[in-house]
Image 1 (cartoon, rainbow, N blue to C red):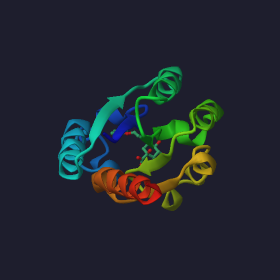
Image 2 (cartoon, rainbow, N blue to C red):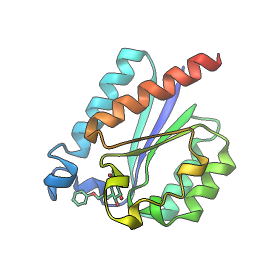
Image 3 (tube, helix red, strand yellow):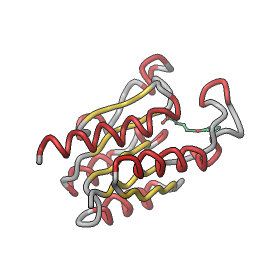
Image 4 (cartoon, rainbow, N blue to C red):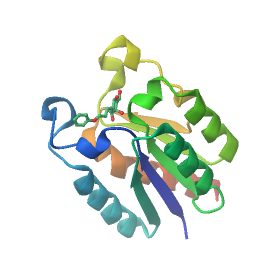
Length: 147
Ligand code: CA2
């Protein structure tokens, strides 16, 4: 069965509690439920995780190898800083969707740079929480098309 790791980076555990004008009112628990519902619809499995530490995110990407068919990654602020995450993605040879709630290109200039983008299969940003089920659908469609 197809299985995706949905991996969330630093501070995303605070979703729905602060800065709703930027990130909305939906909590990470709500998003996890949305992802499980979409996975059930499509007949696939997901593992949903959040971690504030860069090293733990690297470990989670390594551990996905041989277990999951792809990764949906909201690396949070590490998107804009982490060569380690970029290298981890390159090393596992799994398709990765880079995901952001906000449109990072419409925000501060430091958010325009992504270390994930060059090693990502595709990018979804700016659709808020709805981006998560969209990413599941997109990655599933891509894998199905590849056979
Ligand atoms: O838009 C996104 O999904 C981001 O990955 C969110 C990151 C930000 O650093 C990226 O540039 C874009 C920040 C996540 C922090 O989430 C918070 C949630 C509630 C309150 C404070 C922060």
